[in-house]
Length: 258
Image 1 (cartoon, rainbow, N blue to C red):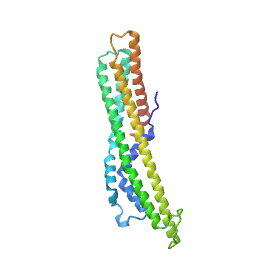
Image 2: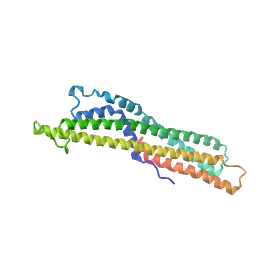
Image 3: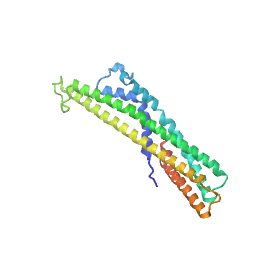
Image 4: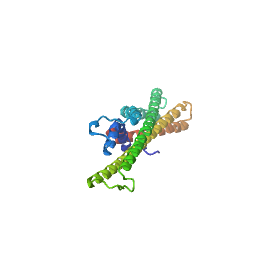
């Protein structure tokens, strides 16, 4: 029996990641404002040509989980019903006429979970193409600021500031920029982890559904009764594990987070 693979935070962080990508221009400007790189007259214009391609990539990726979240909730509900019906027939009459249709339904669900896995891979790809680039940008701008203000030696100004207040402001700005950089690093890590966990979960369900279908297709009406029982139990075993994962996810995660 596998673990649940995903938890509530994984789904929540996927939603957060989409909002993060949508708001990347605002994040870029907020960071620049911390270092005094945006005149007040330019506030809200989000001008940073060197990051235009990164912003465009983030904008394209921001739609991925929004549609996927709704689809995966509906997919869980549909798959729950199919598995319940399939297990009931495997326990009672594995050659019932409904088996053929339920098998097709399971293949459809399997394909959809595979598609959702691919969506998670695309989320990871988008995150790796955008957030590290932004972090590099922040590193460079913070270094330039520290060099300009004479703050490169142990975080202390190596030149005499014009006033005490200007020294405090300079060092506070750099500390704030570093704190911002660390926050964005955590955002990147959670995006990769949550999408990876969701992708692994979808892959596991796809595999369990496929295994169930393969076992069902191997059933033969002329099998000895004992072998038939074992074959039905084997098919039902994969179906029950898929059902367990789906029930847990729907009841404890999707019901509250989407």
